[in-house]
Length: 318
Length: 205
Image 1: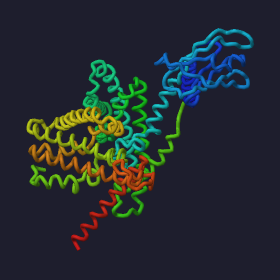
Image 2: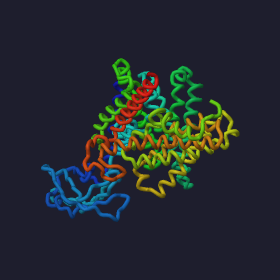
Image 3: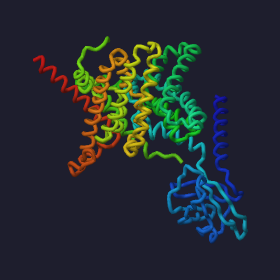
């Protein structure tokens, strides 16, 4: 019990450290900078700032880091009542994926001149990773919102045990395959301009990693292999296994982002399989019209799940 | 299964009706659900699948006597991947708009179970002409399924066909929603079963 508490404390401390690391800005008087909605940047100061200085939009200028030539127009400035927080509203929506550079003229606080500041505003990297993970698992669930991997989905969602086995094996394999695909894409295909070979290379890679996991599992843990070995073959036939490398190559994800995408895809597949298996076990007992027995009714059930998953589309983190 | 004795016409007809990849074999369901929102999408992806199926079938039929049985599946996969790369690049170059609408599904043809299955079941045991006709049948069967689905969803969802306004209003917007794909495929399968059961009963009675 005590050990668990220690672990929790450690994990909490790690989380706080990660969050704090993301909050570092460029000026000692500016405590934090962050995006709000799609067109706002919020600045938090260590003390109250002068109202006439803060409310003048001409005192701020901002640009997105990839293209410094385009200066973004500040439309409106709002100051909080305690004069420590400034909200800048921009004329057009910001691409919050890119870090932005915000520079101000000399900050005036209580009549004192504190010097000019050049600040970077960016999403917390931790948040970006989390949003990729949840995005792949729930918001863009591969089975229910992207309609990929249906063959295996309908094939293995008849029993809960099978569903969990397939989901777990799939997650492991896809994580391995995605990391290898990322390395191969970044270090071989891109430098040698072979990106048009994407499909051939990735399908080979997926088959290879399935074979690899198969061999390793057989030697290391025969008991586990007996339970999960049958699902390994099915992974190759799963469209998600080839879709994940293609997506991470298209979006130019880096290593941690690729890993999160793979985990999300695997986790989302596991969730979908488990939900579907629970529903289909109940369907076995229901009186279904003869023509709808089996696959047809499973499709209609999946349609209801897909409608429910539509609700996740409003979910957004950071 | 040894070499087929069916005639060429029979092979094509079987692919479209008796062994229809979508409604009968229930393979390659992902595009059937995902992008069957319009007839145009169905036609385009159908063409792509037809191309890949015919060319892979012929390729495998040509080299069928030289493939060692133990490495046949990897051989199939690589053959399919090559032809998918070809059609992917061609579509991206000549019809960029439609290619974008189909998104990742063109690339995913590589993982369609139907193509691998036909190579394993048919092309590795039959001559090139027979495999060619079998590929044509399967490709058109897939296209037929996609077009039927697209027809229903486009007509009911947006009241148009191939982009032309037919009804002048939108009966049920629900059908162009992505999740409606599951319902339409499920109902269609049920309908096909119902027709088959009725047909068989009439033949007996």
